[in-house]
Length: 101
Image (cartoon, rainbow, N blue to C red; front, side, top):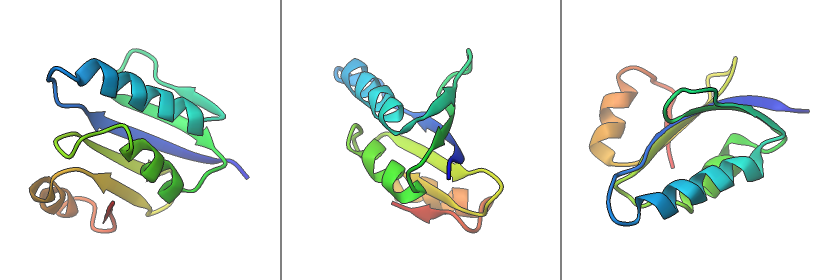
């Protein structure tokens, strides 16, 4: 059964930005049956047969600890954050059910 997720992300701009960005997008493609990204910045909606945990673990392999992403399964209280601890604490104030990868 396909599941729908949205993914929002920020990749720190440094000398390895382009490679990490390309790797991250490639990993999104790996996990997607279909996707929508339109012209928004750093936001994708994907359809996938994988679990949220599998997708989050796969995506994290393209990033550094200074980068971050938030993935949420649509219509479920299921979300995972990858990134800095202080950002996670702030996020928890708005999305109480979010888990840290």
